Image 1 (cartoon, helix red, strand yellow):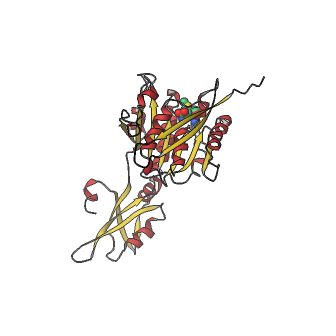
Image 2: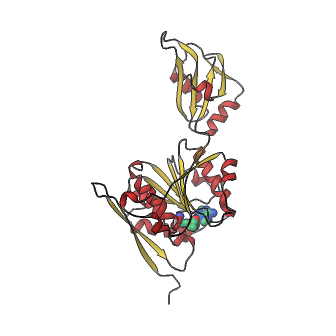
Image 3: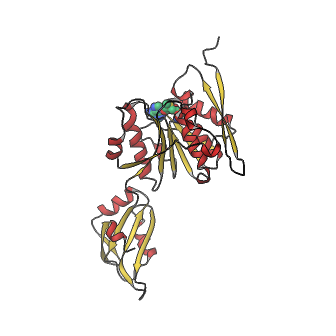
Length: 312
Ligand SMILES: C[S@@+](CC[C@H](N)C(=O)[O-])C[C@H]1O[C@@H](n2cnc3c(N)ncnc32)[C@H](O)[C@@H]1O
């Protein structure tokens, strides 16, 4: 007799009541009597239904799924036009192999239509920086063991800080009322919005409560508190243009937006402007430089706040 547990294929069908009658079938391999990553946890269809109902927003998005396991949400995102990287612990090669098997069953060719990589929460290996820009991070039932909560949050915080505007959508199964991630979100500069899941699936005539039974599952949208690494720059020479300002600050890091403010009636420079960096590093390095000189003139910097933002 073989020691390998038998594989069973579970079919998930996502439908829509709209006039186009869109539908998607996803096939998930499961290994019975095995551990965490070989089984689709009840949180996964909840996240998948949320993504399905927002599928119009997925097209062209760059998505990373953490702790993918059988990867239902990530595979759905790929099928809806997102560019997806699935991940699971780098120390669990069998789990990663199972994630690849899920891709294969759904005709997603690895490295061409979808990627699968090892990402271990709390470990900053070089592959984390090789993922490239990310718009969305997904995670279903990653918060299942309090000892790893901070590792997940640290990884998410790092990724969100390096991908301005990105969000982490995760489903969280409440297994004990003593568990909380609130203090960790605060510690790592993150903010959280809880989505109401009770109407999920109603567009398709399904009742999400039939899927999750009596379990308490929450859908969280986590983002960075600091949305923009933005500097207010003043004492600029009259002659400095947007391009010159961008060129100067690009040596500190990627500059997303750079503006010099001009007087609308006279067309003359008001001698101040704003520089938004694409990551915290650029923002901090620019501020830690001893002196900034453009066209021989010393300029001043300060983190942009509500008051000086309004002049833009
Ligand atoms: C409860 S399962 C959820 C799997 C899948 N997302 C789902 O909802 O069906 C947790 C997943 O996290 C992965 N995992 C556990 N510890 C991890 C770690 N330290 N770093 C990355 N992934 C981890 C497991 O291999 C497993 O796939």
